[in-house]
Length: 131
Image 1 (tube, rainbow, N blue to C red):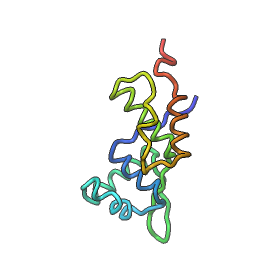
Image 2: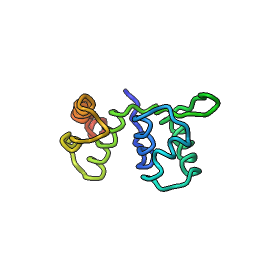
Image 3: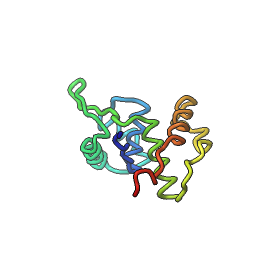
């Protein structure tokens, strides 16, 4: 049985998206990349990065004397988990979200969109494993 993909919070997802676009990044580079969207202090970014390291969403490496971060969560799988969670828990839908919702996204290309569609279609039923 595979390990479930953790569902990032909205702020964690924002940091992951910045890393999926370009990695590795230092804490300062990450903060600068998301500052407008999150509107919080550098210390809040650092604290969130620490929590994400604890959750194993990120890995930390040293580069040129600075700690840098890379995403340990794969983009398409994480987006599929996030979309599945939204569809089932928030929208109370039994069927997967239609992949057309993601058409036009700047976050995924056409190959990733096809992967995302397949992952959502193949997602195990929430009823699986229940007595």
